[in-house]
Length: 488
Ligand SMILES: [Fe+2]
Image 1 (cartoon, protein in one colour):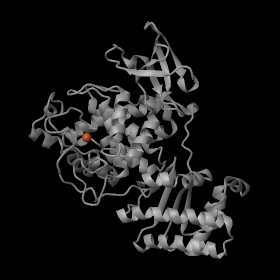
Image 2 (tube, rainbow, N blue to C red; image 1 turned 120 degrees about the horizontal axis):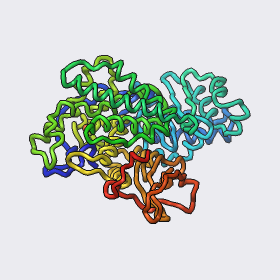
Image 3 (cartoon, rainbow, N blue to C red; image 1 turned 45 degrees about the horizontal axis):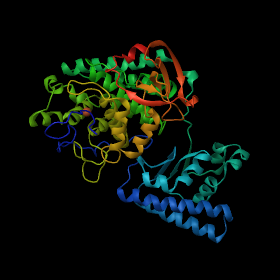
Image 4 (cartoon, rainbow, N blue to C red; image 1 turned 120 degrees about the vertical axis):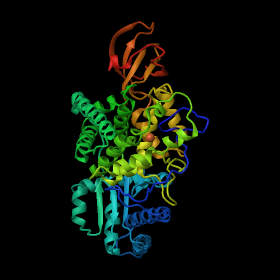
């Protein structure tokens, strides 16, 4: 996938660069998912989960003072001590079938320990932090607590109460957050306002950068706060806005779209405000390094010369330098700006330092960036149809993009994302309004033309509730002369 620039030049895809430099390690750590683990510690997670799994089973069959229980807890304590001995606490998080150690998604363990994750989230356990200083008896209490079933949870007055009663000073159990969104809260005006604010901020930043004047972190934070709030509480209206394009102000709209899509994806992992705030800030500012690149190069139709390439490839480092100059901006956001072309496999630019890899938040932004860029028309490439762009993302999962996050992105937007023009099974033409909560293939659509292709008074259909009507294929809006915005 090419993140940002999809034209195939002679010198290789635009985002497959040489090393430009930059220190990605300096500003790591996103609050809430803050701990970064070494490769060895990540590998050890399997051992940890095996021990936890075994201990849970044991306490279900034996009392706490039974030798089998003692042995199982001793084995768990041994793995826990291995982390603590290296000076790190253990932070596990579970969400929608995925497992995280610190900020890192563990794809294989997510599959191997699928049952464990389901059972834990089923009783309301969303995260587990085991701090240094924990003793075996406290670990035993923790295991006993997470071994209950949902019936016992109900009997005992709910998980929060059980956690409080267990009194575990070194163990912290977080609740599962329910990331359901309801249509009732939908407020299209508020969503529109928030989105337009983001565009306006980008215009301002462009002017400030042009005049070499300072950007206010307070102003940026205000806009990002509104984006985060709206994605969390006004999600459907926000999702319907994603994908708004402007050819003339491509970078501004692109930045707002990337922020919106990144926040939507990020909020399906966590509702930690600090994490989302850094993510939104980094996503919105990810391309500020391009504001100082000569527009002649930026919008040049056709291929770039090697020198022009080298310049283009500097934009993440330039952008990070500009972000550093915004006093009070949080460091995680700067990391995102620096890393957005680094790629999941580390083959992008700038090259990640040895033993370091692209940050979780940067991996989220990379997906949103790739998707929005591919579906936009730019001076050097035409826009791709949404489902084609989605297919390219899926093909890049595991190489350029994080596979787990890509899968989440697909299930979030659906195979036919908002603003896709589609042909339905009965021959009519429709525009996708918003994704379905339950089926990636069956979004909410607005039918605009009948089977004979005569334009009609548009009406909405929820395809997830209409089993005999389905999407047959995507259509190219431009070729059909349909202006999607007229219908939204
Ligand atoms: Fe970029």
